[in-house]
Image 1 (tube, rainbow, N blue to C red):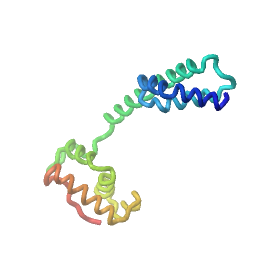
Image 2 (image 1 turned 135 degrees about the vertical axis):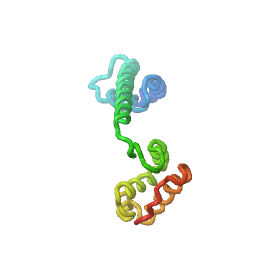
Image 3 (image 1 turned 180 degrees about the horizontal axis):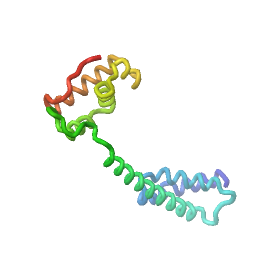
Image 4 (image 1 turned 30 degrees about the vertical axis):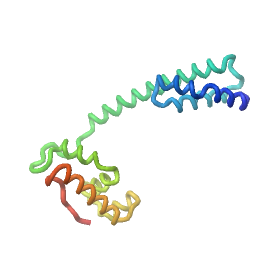
Length: 163
């Protein structure tokens, strides 16, 4: 199809197509882009390119919506089936659900350093190499994360400060 004709169709239909697809899926811009790519791949122009674009965008949006629903259901099943981060019955410590929630609430960098150091047994040097920071930065992230956990959970938080 003629690139100038596609450009004119894009100017005329991109915004309304995006609004149309937004009613059906969470990624309308991707749907509209894919519809125009498919139009560009055609050997000959459809009789009514505008209507063709709406039909293709609708079909792509419905497919995207179904795929997102399947992905959410799969993720929910996987999350429900995944084991907790802590043993269910600690002798003297925080409740597992409380500790897991507090750990999950930390920034990713702090959480990964704490998990790698406490559960993985990695030194701060090895943690730093794994996440692309210096050992001193890894230690700072660890200390900051532990301090946040202590503030949120009280004294039942881990205190191991080895390197």
